[in-house]
Image (cartoon, rainbow, N blue to C red; front, top):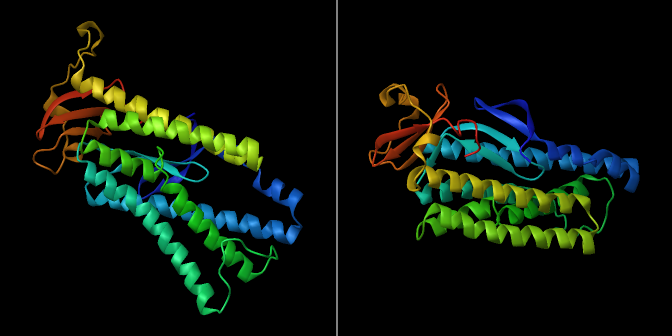
Length: 295
């Protein structure tokens, strides 16, 4: 479920498009259901909405940079994005801060569109009464889309922002793995409910695909958390451990050294393709098994 292809860069990080975009026949569906002026309006609306999703990732990218966390790449799904960071910290409040910036940006965009409509004396409603391809109709639909995206990203399901915030909050009181397992259960229930609603009520393949992608995204987060937990806390057969012939100090470069003096977690060495493990600010190990895995 992780297959994607590169479409450019974002602040020096690879920007990738997930294969699920191929399952969104937006233009053909719009032309089949609406008149061509309406279809053009909805295609333009979706382009603007997808630009908002990209802006959502950019603001989180900048928020992560504030903590010295770089992004290896960002994979864009239809309505959200998944970054691969260069650090996995055991400081939950940093994850809360980074995840919260996305919904805040979407709320700001919605407020701006609502303000434009209000200043123009136009009616603001969550259920537009007209599908006419006018500027007013476009802005009203854009306002609804921004509100929907903000609410969607606040759902407590991984890998959405709401799920990451809940996971980080739980990690204050339990291990990151236990917090991820709890959120994965919530995400599975939520994805199942979304799939049932898509089939029985909305008759929407796009909503159904969204539910399936949320489920696999949560499972991917769970697998990753279990792997990092096993690196630190579980006994591994020495015969299965990779041999490290290079002294540890040679793979701990300034780029992967954390700024916090008592840092606990993992940092990514891009040149060596290794994860460096840190305990109380000191490097204690390097692992190449998951060099290209999704953190």
